[in-house]
Length: 142
Length: 142
Image (cartoon, rainbow over all chains, first blue to last red; front, side, top):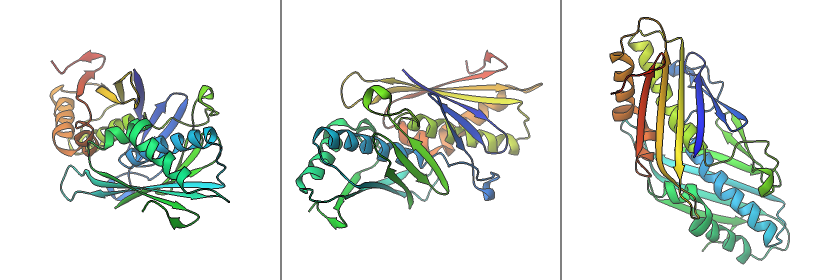
């Protein structure tokens, strides 16, 4: 079983205990918060990008590919009505490194998306997840 | 559109930029991480508990209910196979405060679950979400 605990700190602030780590959540000032922590909903995107990112980090080690930099951006389109939900998500993988065969990052991304990443597997039931892969600034997934 | 950006810091570590806030993610030592940040998947539970928690904080102000303490626990059962996904989730709301009519926290929880909480609306498509409500240690939702 997985478990997290949140404690209210007054106003819109909650401190979340995740294993040994604390994540502070807060609302923006216009909603009565003090903006001293992240808002909850985008944590879905952090979970998504982090899950696939750790797959990539692990596969890069196994496949002996040395990246100089990896950035993963996760975007979501939102509904207009309440409750506000995500209607589409996009993951953008930006890899940088010298002499890397584009087939390798592409293989890592597809292994993560199709096999390993539990968060992607879950959130795909919420809304479609598209992905784009860039190597040294050039799009390589098409 | 909502957007987050993660940057790889080596090993299993990623730093996530969420608005003006940074959340550090890392893997456990047995998977090549250094455990200096939260793992990604439980952030789904943080998003869920945080979203409904902020609804409650906001409704408490509107309904003029003064809680001394609010704790929200989110648990998930996980699948055995890869990809590991959540198969059931439970939210436990623990309210504390003097002279509070139990109908009020119950109303806040059902307004959040049925109407306002976008994260619950999304994650319900992934797995069922049960909830339990406690006031001063006593379960009040049945």
